[in-house]
Image (cartoon, rainbow, N blue to C red; front, top):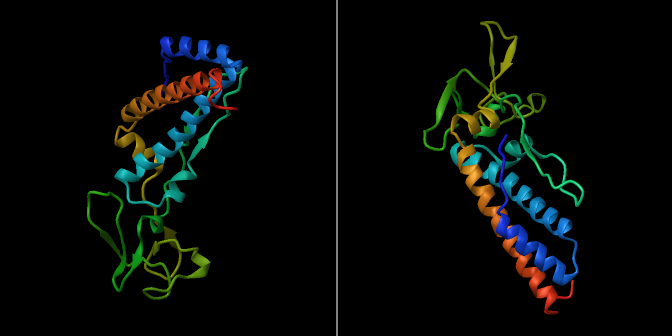
Length: 194
């Protein structure tokens, strides 16, 4: 769990600006927290995709926002679940004559698994396999086993992305607080209507 501290000076400025604009301080602070949480979720996905060659949709399934901040509860959380590894097809899996090629790391090149398959022949996916990459477990035709790449959580932990995330969250929360302070100063001076 990552904990973030709020700048006391910004809190005081926001409270004063909200008082002059006749706006609820707790609601404004909750809005700043919720905006930061939303951007944090997007940033975690972006950071994982910067090191791992995977589609955004496959990563985003593992990231969720746990509760929204309200005036009564000024808390927001983003969760990156420890879940199963993602199927190899999400890592650019392509069937060729010898097997299936894929690329997991952004820095590394493509690798290949001899004898793996995605369909009956190269370029043709088998609908019953749902686009997955498989290979035979034994010498006979069956059974087949599905092949997987890395999990989003594993990529996050292995690449120590939490340190960069703390910096991002702190900076973003400060920006959101500044934005709310300026907005309420404009409201107090009658330059913004809502």
